[in-house]
Length: 229
Length: 401
Image (tube, rainbow over all chains, first blue to last red; front, side, top):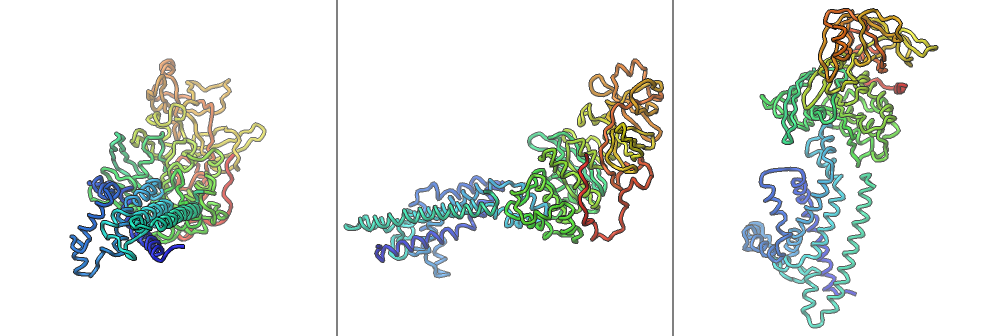
């Protein structure tokens, strides 16, 4: 059905999207919470920076990643020198690119979910002896699970589709950074790549539909647990 | 003693100026119209709203003192809060909701889980989820949850306001039990005279962000300055009485208090039981001579203590009785026609009496005008150890007819 090369691209895509989602989730929850619940000077600028990857051309995001996290980048040179970590041409780098690009979408989904939670219920937890953090973990976090779930789905979808930032930052290396979109792009440049491009397109559609169905099922379960349906 | 002296200005133009004290035990009603600032006062006590300046002290503990820079965080105040909308945690069972505060209690556990569940009659609900409960059940669970956090005081924000009349009748007896069985001060926000009369011993009247009067219920509810809060129709005098006789044939009961006796519609409680009686000022008319040939049976004699101009064409006449006092709302025209003035002997004719079937608590500040009969004290201050603060067992008292 699929060639080994195509399987590699599919596996890599799933791996990158999965880890990008997992790693970006905790900071996205934290920042979503801060943006939804707190007012502080410079909030507008902070909000803007968080949303920058959404509005910038993806190639620009990739280039910014390259000059900061690349082997000679502002931060990357120290990563390379001190820890021997090199992100360029690696799956880890592709994961970073996917995470950065999908981050604002995840934050937004979570922020909306927190905004929908009645703050009074957190106040109730506080009057019962819970500290702010305790109330967050025992009340706010469980109640925002539907939002976290939709955040995950958006993040997953956006990471699966990431192209511009990935190819600019970590290039198009088979087995390392060549995810499905990059593989399709390569296939369209090969004389007899049409069949491969088509097969990978079908896989993309199946992955997308599967993710949607899974998310719907999970959403029902969560809402059932929260007593919302 | 709960001492509150705070001020707060909101950007919306709302200003709060609250200065009053509430007793250490029993229910103190924060009474006023909606939007008057009652809820803000208990939010300030709970710590969810920070006042601009002032001081809040509950028992020996300072919750807030702007001068000393003290602002105890909400979770360390031990203020059990019962919200108007229950605010149960939807993702937890009733049992987990109840245990939430208990697990985090910073004080010794003296209010026991089983006793609370029993007192509120929520044992059969423990496994349920909040969204499957009725409004009244939710409110009872919310009360239990607040109690189990072992609070040093209880704040209740119109816990009955979101319920229909049926449900109110279902909850009120539980609130009465709470008041009588726990030695816990309760600040109770309400805009309903009936609830205040039935539950509270002390009252702080709130209007336009200010506490305009505070003190023992019987004292405060008769003050003319309460007109803006109560309206002309509900201003009145409270008498804490003892039921002395029933007359089934005429459907009447007799209640007595140090200044005399009153005939009231049949009260569904035994002779000897306490009854709180309210006489609205507008239901009291005055006569200079002993009224004969009138249908009004309830008459009390006294002397005019003061006459205050009230809203519109009315004047509030305070009549000093042998022990207590009585207020009458008459027109200023009548005052002039009868040449009423302080010191004159008058007869007060009471056209209607409302009995609020409140078994008066042992700690009622109204005690001085109550008959010293021992039956008026349904519960003596108990020497029981703190662990027995909640009396377990028994069924809740029947809703009053």
